[in-house]
Image 1: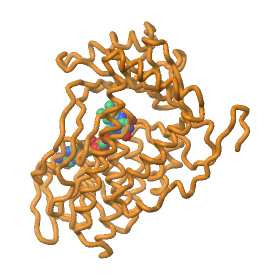
Image 2: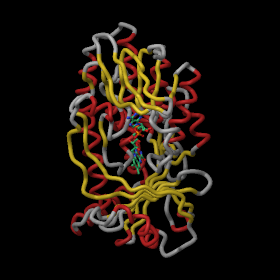
Image 3: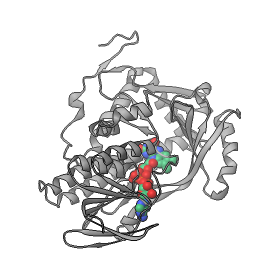
Image 4: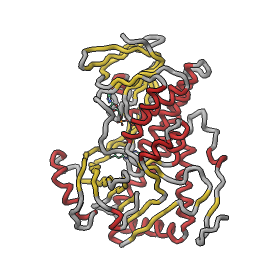
Length: 417
Ligand SMILES: Cc1cc2nc3c(=O)[nH]c(=O)nc-3n(C[C@H](O)[C@H](O)[C@H](O)COP(=O)(O)OP(=O)(O)OC[C@H]3O[C@@H](n4cnc5c(N)ncnc54)[C@H](O)[C@@H]3O)c2cc1C
């Protein structure tokens, strides 16, 4: 058996690696185990809001990620049946530290976090599938299978960051409460100049049949187009239908190159507890939301970072273990009271079936566009309120980032006041 560590993390996804880095920065010894041979590069999270940027900066990796990805200040909403195209931008806001969203693949976020964590001594072992553990009063021993055979790893604490189907959560006998949505989403990565058709770098397309979330992924013309399809259609033939669906989003153009795609089910679920004995949960293993509006990784990363903060404090003897129950209660509350209503409302608006409600949605979106400052304020709301609430349960909860923020508005002539 290898040397014991303070913490074993299962899952080298973005939450596992950011949590590992944050823990290592507190001085904890950390080992990460992942069943894949490398960081997974399937089409998933791509857009990070200011609340996540705060974390990336605190961990010292934001500048590097800004170089890899790109910054975007605009968000487009398209309602084709009403011929409505509008953009909300943070352009009128000056003087806040994070006035943009970062676009970057989540595998890049995980990789950069891993590189920094390794420099601090974190051991990341790929090709190790966790399938069991034994818990003792003061430690926990985890069993893995790998090409070299069966191995065991010991730590004081085990953190499951192993995704929505978490093995750690199942081994701990923790229920994943909530529901799975009936629709299937299809995420595709495609090379196509969407901006030539009037799309912004990030967009909602609201339509009862052809809803989509479309966002630019890199500076080389790669975009994400995620749409919904009826889950009664056979999943194994979803690829045959992509080209037909593209007809609509690309207005009949065929000069695209499909790079990758993946169908997925959407959940609105949280573990009944994020703490049981020496087992803790973060990321999608702790709570999984539909991704409309990008709150999945956003909330999952915050749960990981809050956990790293308090786990570091427990390891140093500054906090009692009972803080883990407060952490669990608070993070579950944030998920059910903040993340779930916001993500559910985004999903509803994207695919609303009722014509009267669609007209009301249109009216509220148009109201935002009569005054660019209100759109900017909405973005600020996302920055401040969601960011503040997401950090609840954290020992940083009182450190209000808006203290550092002096907000000014540009008038339409660009004057700042
Ligand atoms: C199409 C799509 C688009 C999305 N877009 C956004 C977005 O724009 N913004 C946003 O905030 N969120 C978004 N999300 C959600 C986001 O992708 C997830 O919240 C995120 O992947 C969760 O990260 P994680 O590290 O918790 O888990 P995962 O990324 O699922 O990583 C889990 C890791 O655990 C490993 N693992 C699993 N089981 C075992 C085992 N038994 N032993 C060892 N290792 C194991 C896996 O190999 C994997 O590497 C999107 C999701 C989807 C599907």
